[in-house]
Image 1 (cartoon, one colour):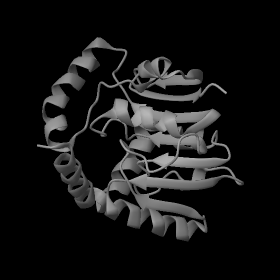
Image 2: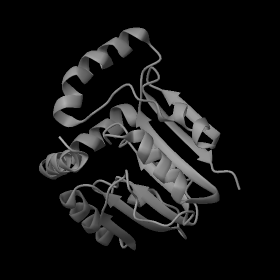
Image 3: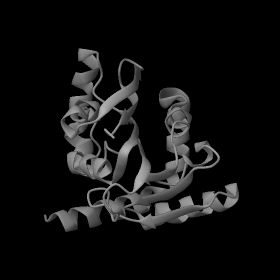
Image 4: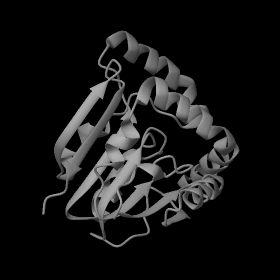
Length: 208
């Protein structure tokens, strides 16, 4: 399967999942992710670009004065995100796009946000490199995701889960984006892990 075919497959999967996404993600926010959306988005500054915006659950949490653009692979997700932005009265430029090939110039935004999505992007390393590329010097990368647990028994369960989840949903449970950031030249300013280390959220700065 080519990378283009793979992207089309996952776009169709997320299109089918879109009507159920809010209920499942809001449940996870309550029981596992806690206030991570507000924690991450509240630190955004200036011109914000959100990767894998989904149904727009982050939109209520951006500070006044920020401008928001975002992409998602799924047209159905983008439709729901646009509807949420309209309900909130929030101006946001939301489009279909590929996290592994961002349609933005180098050094063009102040903040890049990605929450609970790098776990499902096929080449998360390439996606992170793209996020860093589009950040201006001194810009902020703001991430939250579920990652490999700090507890060995849970990591074992995550490994078993991936045997099915990666194949059928493209969902990874043992990635840890924070480990890749020093190699991309970023300095981690803040980071937190909780829930047996399963949830990690962080702020990193591109040198300026």
